[in-house]
Amino acid sequence: MPRPASLLAAAAALLLAVAAPARAAYLQRPEQDCLNPMVAKVNQFDFFPDEYRSMVDKAPAHGFQAASQVTEAADFDIKYYGTYKVVRVKRFKKSYLLYQCGTPDPSTLPAGAAEGVTPGMTSFEIPLYSVAVTDTTVNGFLSELNLIDRVALASPYSVESCFQRLVDTKSQDGCKLVTPNPFFNTSDPNAEGAFKEANATMYEESDAVFVGFNDDAAKDILFPVTADPGPLNRAEWIKFVAAFFNKEIDANSAFDSIKSTYNTLKKLVADKSGEPTARPRPKVAWVSTNSSGVSFRMDPFKVTLVKDAGGVPFNRSRVEALGGQYSTNPTLGVSYVFVPKNADGLKILLGEADMLIDETYYIGIPSALNISRSLGFLNVGEAQATVPAFTQQQVYRWDGEQSPTGSSSWLEMAVARPDWVLMDLARAMTPAVLSDVLNVTNHLANKGPAGTDFNYLLQVGNKADRGRPRITAAKLCTTFPSCKDRGAFAICPNVYRDCGSGALKRADPTQRCNSWAVCEPVELDGAAGGGGKKNTAARAAPGAAAAAAALLGVGALLALA
Image (cartoon, rainbow, N blue to C red; front, side, top):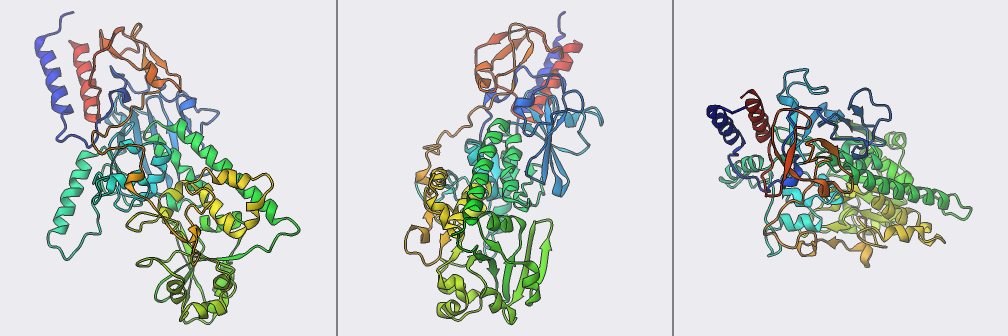
């Protein structure tokens, strides 16, 4: 039936008015990210079948919905629906609605029209394609998922070499793509204004911004990974990140490998520690200091790492009995017992430490002298007379891998790879793992960034490689050789449209982009099929929520015409 020209003109005007962005994004969405033509209804088809999900419930409640079962992480979950997902950060009671590009945004529907969607829920069209990352703990997960091509801006405190290429502002290898630094020079009268302007631009030109514990803007995605209480808990947040990019298959495989390596090392340590000739387990003081005293760290994941590596953590009640005061912050997931420097019990406690892990911040390269003074001793000799860890050269820090400006991988890649962290600690606490007859340790170690040396740990006073930090550099990045013409690789939908029948079909997980095609629609009538022909010419896919909504409006107008 003929379409009135006025309706067609109105449809075209609506599409152009709504879809046109105020500014171009830092990176452009690949056309193959989206289903094209788009689906007219939510839950019209199951875009997230079991093989594309993380932690699938074996007994879905009904329809397409299935609750994801996280195996280790305590602080997030994911629920899948036909054309969208709902990701929840439990600690902050924050939920994100993620809908497949080429399907409608369920948040625009009337309340109750889309299951699991509540009024005011933040929605993102996925896969994300131009993200800003202000918190370095996200970097390791993005690296593991090979998603750096979708990072538009990164934190100036980034460490990994390809993130260094993004943020490097000094060398010819750097892209100068840095998130605004909130720690600007307050003495500069123009600094605050420049920060606000750069921050506004970042939010305008990114489709999402990964942050840590504070989300103040509509595009913010909370990432409180360091509050989750165990090493493997934290590693499983790779599935959280993956959900925003439709990379669950990769995340499941990566996490399974990390968990397997971690548990293999843990068992090897336990076996070696249980041998008749095994040396006693070292007592480990994990500390941070300030001018007033020493905090003995009791953070759950640190206690777990010490035990799994063959060490004995300090007992909370013992530290309290000798003058310590316990403090905890459940929101941040930290706990410690603080002992003042003038407390009589401090030197008694330090005298029990066979091994000391210091995470105090120092200006410049920390030395044994710096650390001994921060603990309340006049010099290294006095510390050696009291603390076995100093006598036996068993003082460590997490400075093993650093950026050229001194940022540490402890708050980046080490969060995503607890297996490599455990490897470092096991070598320090249970050296017998280095001599296992099956050579399991070195085989696993060779998968890490430092091979048979420490990955992230640094032995203070060691003149060899284990006592020197590895410095990352932009020129070492091979993922993208140039800052020019950066672009995101396509992440094709889990579903494709058969151009012959117009029907939606499930794609082979290993062949998603091989199945993808743009079909020229005969009718956008809201039906599952509708017929069509393959369009081999390049065609712009809807790259934003507004464009998707506009296309849905066009379909409705055409259907009424």
